[in-house]
Length: 416
Ligand code: 3MF
Ligand code: MG
Ligand code: MG
Image (cartoon, rainbow, N blue to C red; front, side, top):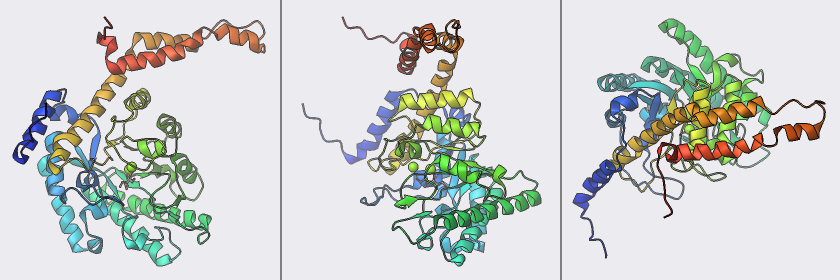
């Protein structure tokens, strides 16, 4: 039977009714208990891309902050030029806009947690923020210093840097060692300014977080992975390496084929996991920025087990793009609330994994190992001593899937 066409006037009501039927939504109060931030640019994304025209109208910070507040997203993040036109940076217009943002945030009970400098979109960045021309590099310093000022003004605790335009399309023109040195100069300028302003304002300095992406928009990227950035932080080029850490993005690490959980583990060990951009997508594909948990829920569960086990306290920034098939209405009716709710559910399931008696016993048994061999250098005897225990690896993986699917709580599928 063919379904009757749905009149335009009834489509939003249909979406809302089916959202209600999905159930399982958390209240805005519950959602606010998590350190989840909503980027200005994520909600304002109009669905455009290299081969795509926009599908949604433009929307300003007033409406976005208000909608985030209604949903229960308690934190907001922004690039400087998401809210201040490039030509108004550093002028009275900037001060006026920042004043309005402060008021809208306060009126809605939302806090600004992070600010970031756009160093990739405007034509001035055609050769990147660490271009050969010293004027462009000085301008980059000016922009990151200005963002630090805005951050302190808005009460932020984090500043993020995504050097996506630090690289090249055609090889041979740049010397990578120069570019990296120059890029460090911009980060140093931001940290110096931060120390100054923090002192003036009696606030702690910001946490400066580098965000890697392996490809796009440059063809070759000089700091393509979080690990490259850890090496950059430790390279001796930074005057305040202790102020600088990472903002890994889940999908950016998948894009190069990395295991996000292992990337996060390396950042944790280095004490550099400051901030985390959350989303989802596919390995070795472009930056599709799908909502968290829609592609890899099992991997996400494992990621959250790791972060919870190690007491990660930083923000979870919803850096994803509502698909261009989603309407402006759907962005706040479906995209954001469901992304937040999947995150919370996975976070809580991670808690179940951490206290599951089967996983605990299996993990403890693996760590206890088999009996010590008479000769500790006898590889055959060592192998035999642990042979049967190692089956627990697969058993644990099975149990994780059971927990993810709710089978441990009695959800059963009968074959009769
Ligand atoms: C690009 C990104 C960026 C960064 C942002 C933070 C536009 O792939 O992920 O979002 O997250 O620039 O500084
Ligand atoms: Mg990001
Ligand atoms: Mg991305």
